[in-house]
Image (tube, rainbow, N blue to C red):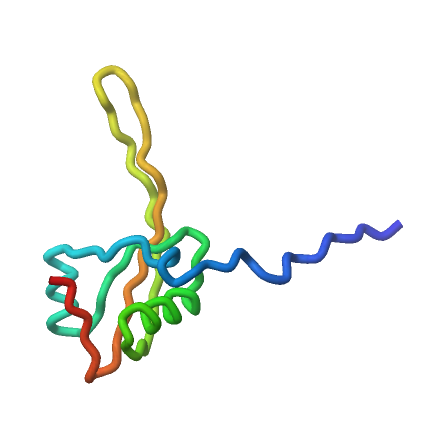
Length: 106
């Protein structure tokens, strides 16, 4: 008897552009990247793909995206008084824009 695997889901969950990008990551390193390399960092939904991020940034900010790089960041162990806990894992995207496009967060 042959083992039959169930088919993979045809489409993952559909996310709206405002659900994909959770918040911009405005840090010293991020400001440096934005001014020098025209790259911007965002915290994104854990299930979002690079294509989802590209579409969301282009839709919300009306810019042209050249490249998207993603990272899955592991949560850290934290303590509060006598209890140990853990912060949640999260996903980060670094988006490179076309030369003549900018995003102004301030």
